[in-house]
Image 1 (tube, protein in one colour):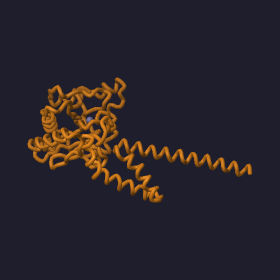
Image 2 (image 1 turned 90 degrees about the vertical axis):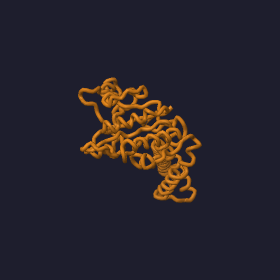
Image 3 (image 1 turned 180 degrees about the vertical axis):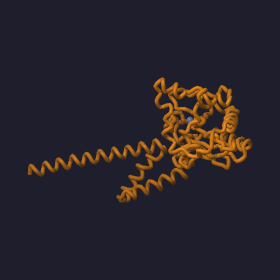
Image 4 (image 1 turned 90 degrees about the horizontal axis):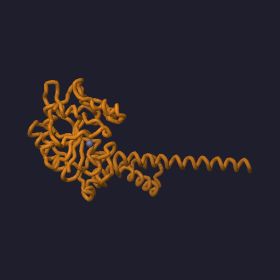
Length: 284
Ligand SMILES: [Zn+2]
């Protein structure tokens, strides 16, 4: 009896451990999905509930329910509901597109109607200046809730901010639509020896995170292309011409190299990350 009781206690302990582990994993998946996609965490919980309700116990069933729910939400429901929160999906056209499908799939492509219109205008003007060249965007905002940050960008939380890719050229100087990294981030147009090295300055002050986007490239691609000073400068000037634009972040050495002089161009500070791999733009 004593022995059996001991076994029962051991079993109960193991069960308690398993339950704790199960809830820990559930919470972890919920948090990760919420951080990356905003709606994914809630849909994951919903998919577990539905799987239980319909007695679908196999992991593949739960995963299938989640995928179906997620795709229906991302491509049908979220775009319909987002305007209630003052956001809309960026209108992709012949002149404007995300750098990769990831940004669309992860619901990271929502902006205020004002920013959507501004992007449309800029993309048309850019195409007028450089035939066939598109405005390519990266992280914008999530569809819902002001102050809900789109990590790792703390400020992308109100529909009024977006990151835009630089413009590049091929070896003959022809402007192209290709970019330098898989994610669009992390391949830097670094300062040359005569230019201000802001990254070193910030890191000396202890801001270790300043160049961490170098870990977010997911691979560097198109080595044959290089930063287009003319193309990027024209794009920035088209952005700055709009009176709705409040701020534009660009690394100081590039501001100087491109000979840009506009009070809307600000230094983002060492607490942020370096901006010599993309342009950050925000409207009022
Ligand atoms: Zn940004």
